[in-house]
Image 1 (cartoon, rainbow, N blue to C red):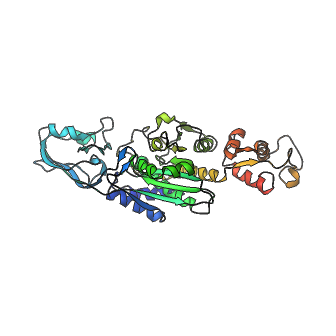
Image 2: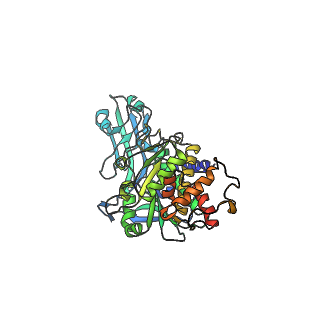
Image 3: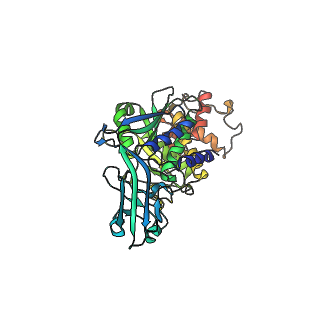
Length: 423
């Protein structure tokens, strides 16, 4: 089961302290590059302008902790969990009262065992994240030593890029993000699965070209689009943001802004006829990098298929979204679904029947020699396929019309082409 291999990669990536920019992000990308050596690790310099945004500095964190005085008891320590510090916190080293400190503490009363994920990327700030139980354990009468050893330095925002060339310049985009540390579904499932989708594409020659990008969310995709906009607009026929694909919940679908692109049509057909039980959302429910790829003027045909959607499970953006929340089975389900998307896109074309009136199927061995009322479903599907193969409908549209999975029509199309009955 491929999900086991994907899960093992997620386990390797889990301890790495990633952020928008810094050594942790580079380490994360180097691990992925071990699996797909052809991937290039790119750099966008700090302070570079990307449309309306400016690339932030790198964030380097040595350690961060809160120590109760005079006992020396550690309340939180980033050695215990990467989420214990607000991402991009500025440096601090001081002794303060509980009253002064509590304004810099973040917790979830509704999830008393969860460490929340909190960021302050673009505003100088510092803070700590802890469980509500840890917060309640603090003595309001005590003093606390607060230490965050961090630096913000001019450097690089790094991202990974792999382009697998096919017979044509028509491209399929897979984008995933790499900036949330130590969270299983919201973070690690996306890049881990995308890595193995890249390996799948590279197993054999392809008709289409595939572009895989591993970017910090929001600023990373904005930077990538700013550098490649014209090329992306010219070549991309379908794209997917890969995130939250590791749990065993039902599939979820987030459409493109227009909702009628090839990416939408392929995903919806396979969800309806290969999966069956799924939840469809509106683009108004967007929340990941599909925001950037669909922005007016960018207008790329990008949708997203997740398992349980971000923001729709209580563990989201907390330490409870860990390696126990994702499973090899959940990852394998997503892998099988996305590889079917790839296979359908590879075979998607406008087909045309080559005969006038129905062809003589039985002399080709495609029809029962003795007719009876309950002739096989496969024969009917072949006849239905040819009936709607008018040179205008593509594979997905024919599949939707005759109410079957486009993936199941691949073999049908290959058989009919071999017999010269469609072109």
